[in-house]
Length: 98
Ligand SMILES: [Zn+2]
Image 1 (spheres, protein in one colour):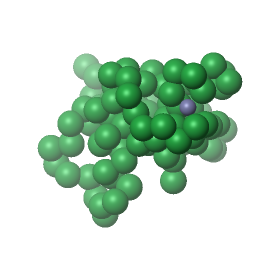
Image 2 (image 1 turned 120 degrees about the vertical axis):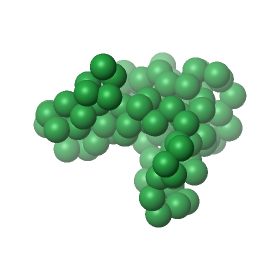
Image 3 (image 1 turned 30 degrees about the horizontal axis):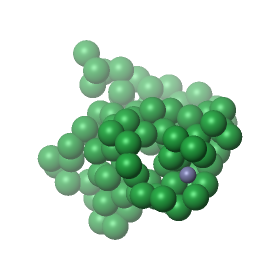
Image 4 (image 1 turned 90 degrees about the vertical axis):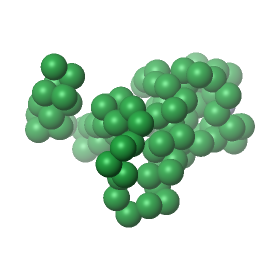
């Protein structure tokens, strides 16, 4: 499971309002550790808090905050893992954005 609530490089807690995540690092990276990875994405800390809680429950709550941004981050991680385009996921996100 990706590490969402502490830095994959130095284990510090999320401290930025907008934080970096890296599929290759395996989750959140603090500002000091992020430059070591070229695949960083920026997302809100709220998304990371939600993702961290999702690791502890069986299914997402119906009122998950920032659900679209959360889905976009997860899609980037899945795309990195499978290393091929994921048109169904990308289409789902694009439909939600409209
Ligand atoms: Zn760090």
